[in-house]
Length: 370
Image (cartoon, rainbow, N blue to C red; front, top):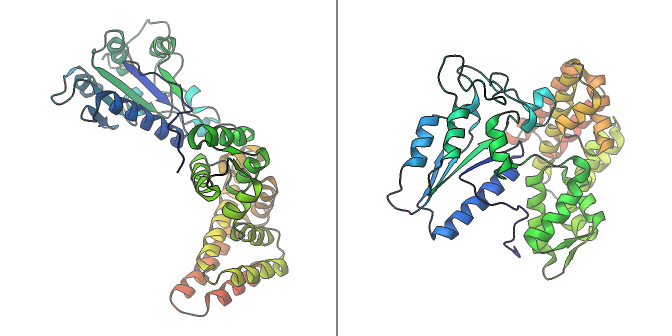
C-alpha cells in the first residue's frame, strides 16, 4: 500500500502532553504517531510505558520521575486518564449527554482552578490536576507524559499552562459537512492519492461519517486503483458500493417506506447476484430496526429531530427521514416485534428450518402487513 509516512498531524512532544477528544480513531492514530516518533528517536520501544485508568496520580508521577533501566528516555501514556480528574466518587459529565463538544464540557465534580485560589479537593488533599501542573512546571528531563482524555476542562490553570506550550491536541470528529474534505486530506497525506470531490461525497454517502470505516475503505481503494493517481466515483461505486451495498440499502429503504412489492423485488435481485447474501441482509435489517428503536426512544425523550439524526448518525437524509417516520408509526413495541420476527426468521435459517431466502421473504411480507 502506498503510505507516504507523512502525517496530517503537526505536533512536537512536550514533557506533559494532552490528547483530548471523543474521536477514538483520531486519538489512536495520534498516539501511534507519538509512539512511532519516540521509537525512531530512541531506536527501540523499551522506554514506552502504558498505564490505564486504575493508575493513581502518585503512581504516574513516580513512573515519570524514575529512570528507565533499559532506555535513555521514557514515554508514559495514560489511556484513559479521565478518572484522574474526577473527585472521589464523582463522575465526569459526558459530552453526548450535554450536547456539546466533549473537550469543552467540564467534569461536574471537578473544581475550577482558573483563579489559582484553591488547589485542593473537598477532602483537603492536593488535586491530581494541581499535582500534574506542578510536575509540568519542573518535569523530568528524560520523560514525556501523555494524558489521553475524552473530556477536558478548559478553565483550569493546567489547561492554560499546557495550551501556552502547544501541548494540548484535540481529536474531535469533524463536522459532518466537512467529512469529504477530511477524506481528501487523508487520501493525500496518508496514501499519496488524490480523490475527486464527487468521489469523496459518494464515499460518505455509502459509508457515513465513521472515520475508521472511511479510512478502511480508502485503504481498499488505494489498492484497487493501483498506479492511478486519482480515486474516481467509478472506483468508489465499483469497490465500496460493489453493487451489493447499493442494492442492500435500496432493499432496506423499500422496507422503511413500507413498499413490500419493491422490497421483494430488491430481495430477489440480491439473491440472484449472490447466493450467500442472506447473512448480509439479516445484518443490515437488524441494524435498521435497531436504529428505528433507538430513534423512537429518543423521540419519547422529546429530543429534537436534528439531535436524534446527529446522535444516531442517520445518513443519508432520505434514510434518516424514513427511520424517524417508521419510529413514530411503530413505536417501541412495534420495533421490538419487528426485531423479534427477524430474529425468528434468522434462527430458523440457522437451524435448517426452511430456506433462508424463503424465510426472509416471509418476514418481508409480515413486516409489510404491520
